[in-house]
Image (cartoon, protein in one colour):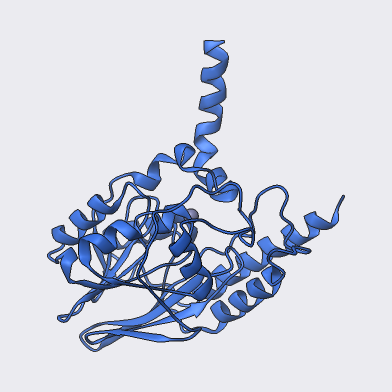
Length: 295
Ligand SMILES: [Zn+2]
């Protein structure tokens, strides 16, 4: 029995991160990378990576307050605050926190980070509703698989395309639903001297769900396919020099970091990366819809 259990576990472990991403596994079976330490580092200009090894958190700094994108897992806020300090900034100077989507691995730490920083949290209407209640609704394709998140009481609801400003920073929110109804991607420009890049934090684009959910015929989220198509079209056209994603490996971040560490100072930059990401999302969606048609 013990041996059989060991074999079963060791057979599962190598595929767990990808599988967990696909399945939206509950917190207790999350991949260890999602809470694993990752030394913080500069991405480009005033943009920094302060997340864990498996879940991105991005800090954009100014001399009049900072913006934080995503809050990682419920157990991650102390680590994120430590990362912010280690690169020379104060978590108390974070003025605005925004989110990709309201699953526990990206939104679970936001309420605590708001308490640590006193920042305003801003979100799409659908995401704001989940932050207020702490629970995803039946319109979330993964409803039933998702643990609740710590509630955020004070939240600013934004419109699609709205530009949010903190000091000299301007960050634009783009509603890119499909993975969740309220999913949002964020764009901004960061500069090193005269050299400026369009940076895109593109939300997860995987068409994954609970067993009972069908993207092609959902009555609880009838816009699911239309939302994905809008998101894919947005990612194909948005200026994109440097792509970041809620799970770093979804955009090959660690390979790009290794390239930079090996001496290619532009190793993180891949022009056209967002449209390749969009193409992969479209293939995934088409595959999923085809599978829903086969009885
Ligand atoms: Zn995730």
